[in-house]
Amino acid sequence: MGFAPPGPWCNQPKTLKDERMPLSTLKIPALAACAFLAACATPTPRLGPDGLPLPQVYRISDRMESEIQFRMLDSVNALRQASGASPLALNAELNAAAATHSRDMSLQNRPWHFGSDGSSPLDRVTRVGYAGEFLGENISETYETELETLSAWMSDPATRDIMLDPRATDLGFSWFQEPSGKIWWTLITGAGSGGAARTS
View 1 (cartoon, rainbow, N blue to C red):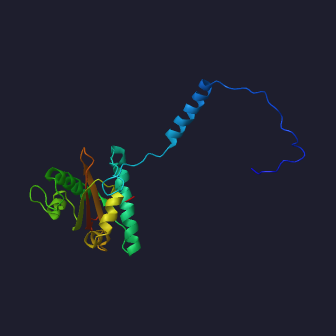
View 2: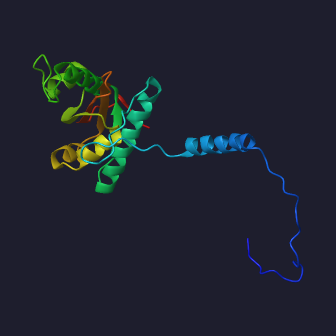
View 3: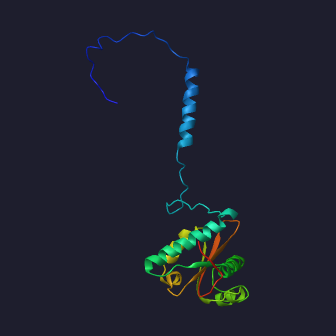
């Protein structure tokens, strides 16, 4: 929209009859406009003592389960491709071992690699019938998403090496979420299962 100074077409302003609206008539549109603008406002996040926004609880629904596993598989495979390693396939037995360990860590209320029965990661993949070689296990106790957890694992050389191991062919990934929203993540890699794999 432009602006033009008054020209000959604008000699005299026309005089309009002075009509005033009652104040109550103006209140209704003004309140409606305020309500509309308030609904459009971005909510202010709650801040923690460090001044950073408090995390939102990441709730995993039943419909998200396969999406999460394939999102993790795709993300790990993208990282492996960038490092020159071949892609992994989801493995049902390793998924089962990961799910069992995630639930067990929650029951023990501590993230560690040994089961409440003293089992090691190798014991657990053997119990579920995995035919390949166990290579490694990453675990996490967090309120973060699977991709935030993957990022944390990539920042640590020990956990990164498990995911990028060039010998790996199979991936197991699962979790257990407590009612509070805390998630216990478990990722397992293996080599040479020879057939129980699903790929995306």
